[in-house]
Length: 238
Image (tube, rainbow, N blue to C red; front, side, top):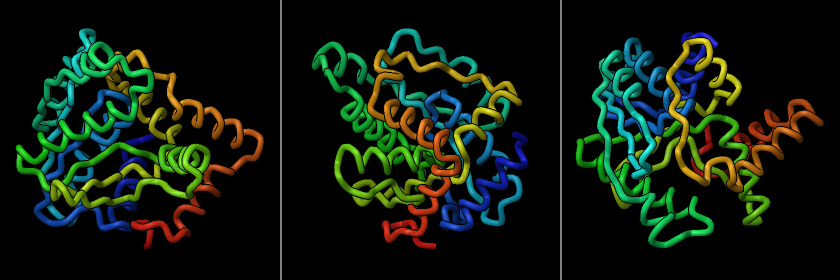
């Protein structure tokens, strides 16, 4: 996938859900994975021509795993001219050594978001951008249905009352396959997650389920996404 196609998706999402306003200072949460690096390229490209002027910075929350190498990410952000910050934490030790969590993902996500939001506020940003794409939207809805018994997923734009920050998700119109195609075409330096729970989560189970459903019923993922957009879920109104 070409950068222009990515920018088209991101521009549409930003316009449809009023994600970006004049003078915004947007922090991009960078895990080092394919999604967050695609988002980095996309917002950097959008910044050049979007009618509302905005600033960018990138932030990685280092969970404390010993084998996390961020040198290529540092080089990439320097190349793009985007300010890059690394937040050091002991989250990995707390979860896997101190608490020995058997289901670590929920607590890890909560602590990671807390550390990210603290850094975003400290840097003076008013918005933080997450790299959730269309597959994430649908997978989250399925997880809510299967494990919680409710029809729910995250919204394109979320205001966080406690912090005064606004979360935006500009990749929501992109398929995961689009992201993979973009990363491969441009040889973007993806950093593999060192987390021992990576690939063993409920989300991975639902990801496999959605893939199977879509293979057996072509187009089902798009229909699910359309159902979400046409629902009365808060934040999805156009």
